[in-house]
Length: 401
Image (cartoon, helix red, strand yellow):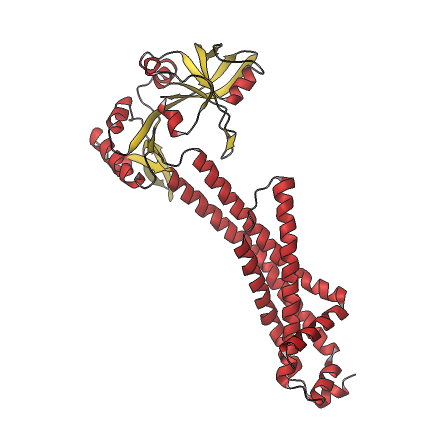
């Protein structure tokens, strides 16, 4: 028989027992849909991570003082307070750096407007907005004069503004951070959530204001640097590290952590990719279970159609014809289940994206891989029943009741 004839015969056999055929395909349907959906969720998570990290700046270096310590088999970061504003001036002149800002943090309650709000105050310079690619929605940023004089001025985020001044222009208003009176001179443009944190819940102050009036320290927490391009980040990292080691006695390269956003992105993406592969592997178990179901039903089918097999052999069907007939029937069952599974996954991904708000990215490569694997499952689990049917003795098959 020709392959086309064998496919027609297989389809007729499947349609003759529609309910049983559908239940047989159910494992493949669930397996294919699960694999595609799990990979789509993983790809969506990776895309979100990349977008959130890029929102923090693509050519950004973060410098912290500290060393890695191994205790109990766990590597932890031991922070040190050695970075100062003098380090900013030393690093500013390095080639490839377009913006640099110190960061000094202090927590406190901001009181003003209609109430009070617990937030984080960050002492920075005007370069901070350049590094973070952030703009003002209203007002102005503090000046170099404000930094030199530790001016009592602040730029606030949208969340802080909404909590203290709902439906009111906060520019020019006076608030109190802790016991220090501050005048609001700027409002940051809304950024929303990023990596689970509210970016708009922030108060920016001149770095000297936080250091002298709030923290009472001459040290800064970290340094943020923006480079001209991503390509020169490794060169700038090396230059920054060498400059800091040369500037601080008793330190070495392990005394400072210089990290780029690209490194953070790579690590987060790798973690997400590993989780995606794990989820896809777990979902792939359903395909194996579906294949076992196909083999079981095909064995039952061989037993039910023993007499039919005997008649085919009696009229000239060869062993290869019988083998191909049942093997193609198994493959058709598996591939049909795969096609239905793909259709189901498309619906589920649409529902997740547009209804549930879960980010899922449809990957055509995953669809092709799932369909190919479902076809392989049909061949692998259908071969034994097909081989058993092909090796039946024609005389015994004709006598089978």
